Image 1 (cartoon, helix red, strand yellow):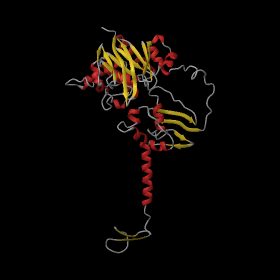
Image 2: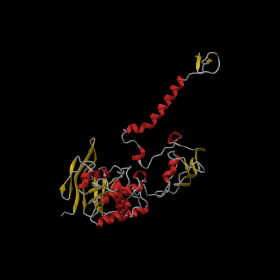
Image 3: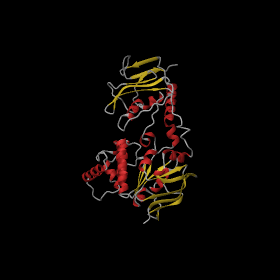
Image 4: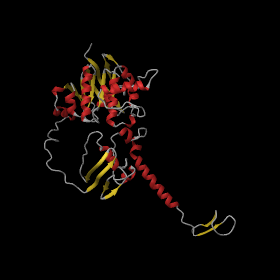
Length: 405
């Protein structure tokens, strides 16, 4: 039996004549952890989606266990023993964690109690703190990622592809994930690992492949790489002197205080948070998953509401503000870019142009309606006589008015 479990030869994928990957050769050995590294747009996700059956090659071949294969769907890839944990989660939000884990593996007769018990035991074996009866749509990004990983492991795949799996995990959860990957390796499972964290690739991987502009640059054992060599292969030049040669010794002068948050509270996630943002400066906010970073700025942008009593203050340009919806915050100059682009960031069924101009179109429509209503507004009639139903002046139901001139 060959040591190579999966191979791609001269793999090329074109989109409207533009190559996402071009003549890429890639080999994955049995029981190895193979890191795939490159800048954004280098072709990492496209290459792995070819393996997972999400997209098909324009030209080139793919082999699994020495046999040529061309999976056209993730289900076909799963039958070949290949599973992928996508960067954008592919879970069903209205189903529970347990139902998502066993989706596609249901028996003719299922008992929910049995599914929940099996899911609980399996999640505990992975050290994942996720409740199997919880609805997936109510979980945070980190726990959704855990469910994705657990589902791939449950399918007993020979090859598991992880696309940025640690992006939303806490340090403790990352440790569990690394232990899980090493345990899969001991079982003979081959791992393809995409990460922008170069240190993770150096620590975890047996071999590293680097892509640049859709083309294969180098593949070598991880022990032969260091951070400088990876960066140089990724960008085509040495950045140690151009970007990191001199350390900043001065801080950019602070401009005017633009935004102030004082004792912000939104039970139970945000508790007495305070910060200031100055013009012309980049303010970084850090914390573990669940620390309230996202919720704090959702309150500032009007996506969430802070506590009505003792909820703190948000001061913009020296004036207290309280936004109940995002629209007035946007008009005031506050834009919120969500962490979950797929769910909260845009409309998938609309074109790029419609997504970009959606808010602007609404503003234009409101402005036009205001002008039209103002033009058609009738002044109060000057001479009004009110007649009662029985005849004679006084309060009644019948009105006769002389229009204003």
